[in-house]
Amino acid sequence: MRFGLRELLFLAVLLSVPVASFIFVFKPRNEEIRQAAKEVETKTAKLDKLREISGRIENIGEAIEEWREAVRIVEGKLPSEQGIEEILEQVWNLTEKNRLTILATQAEPAVPTAAYMELPLKVEIMGDFDAFYQFLLELEQLPRITRVHQLMITRVGYGKSSRRAPKPKPDEVIPPGAMYAEFTLSIYYEAGRRVASGQ
Image (cartoon, rainbow, N blue to C red; front, top):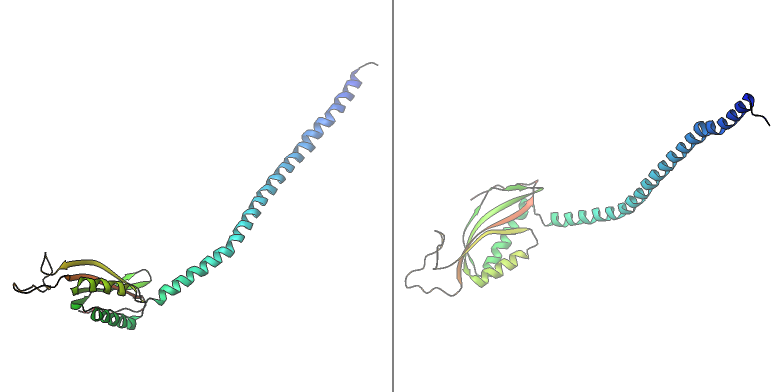
């Protein structure tokens, strides 16, 4: 068998058909398949993430309901303007019950905080320390939200005390545990209803 120009051309055409089909058919097809596999992988990852999130949505819904219930409970402890007088009456009853003497009270201007208001009352009180401690414990148990801060306790007859604290007479016997206290009692109430600050 002789190889001439005609055979060489036939061999070149014969070899060029698979090369051309690889370049023009198989290579683009493989690229499309690779691209489709990437898209399938991306969509599968998104579906997995969606399943995970949708599984959490039930838990998130339950958590939101729990938080709403907690907010309702806290809001239930926030009185209206009329409810503040009731709280003050409860506080004064606690002082009488514990045999404490209120020397002075002064309402400060109401302070807006978040979705509620804070009414600070400066209070000066005198009595037995154990009774004052019991008063604080009972104050903490009130069904409404209150806060005691800026507390200063002075033993009667000792140290520096307020100008309003009674000064013992030189011959007066001071009972053990007698004390004088100044503190700010904050009462929280609904922000929609303001309380006029008075003195």
